Length: 278
Image (cartoon, rainbow, N blue to C red; front, side, top):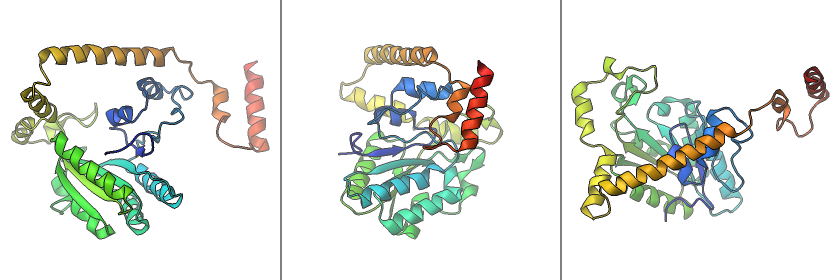
């Protein structure tokens, strides 16, 4: 069995939308977060997902610490966290993996190697032939997998979860894929990406591959795709409507959930703000 939303934790970066939804985080909560609505964006009780991290690799020490804490408490739980190949150059990556190895923490580091750290090619980012090899330096296993093969990725993750749950420590998984689109809306990959390499990567599209596989088993066709598209579009539209209808934060919200016992200066500032609003 793979990651269990009822007991295992997910520590995402900013790319894991579908992973967090699958783990139980409602779409309307995610949408509210992007709209800056801090109250409706609160992660519901029982959903074992940490807040999305945009600062590169900063979530990895959190994941290791969480996994270590779960182990010390004797809980039968595993932590799955994510990083890109570019994030592996951050100090947080090395510190988190080193601590995970030392503490034998039940954590899985899932690296999506899409060959580009913004416009920096994987070839000039590191001389290693495989990022998965780095795990040996921290005392645990690294596994490289075809990131465009859904079944292979699932199999590798399940094995890593079972190993961590059995007390056999962390795993670094490198899923080798390719970034087909831009890094962000200010990026122009045509300025640095080899068009031949790009066309070759198109032939390994993971969505098309899994669709063809399911079709060969009689489990996928154009009608099912059309029906699913309508169903999912409805779910997304409903989530967005709920998020837009949710209340906006107010200035007084700045003082909530910061201190258990606010110091006098904060109480004075809050009182001055509320007096000015009356």
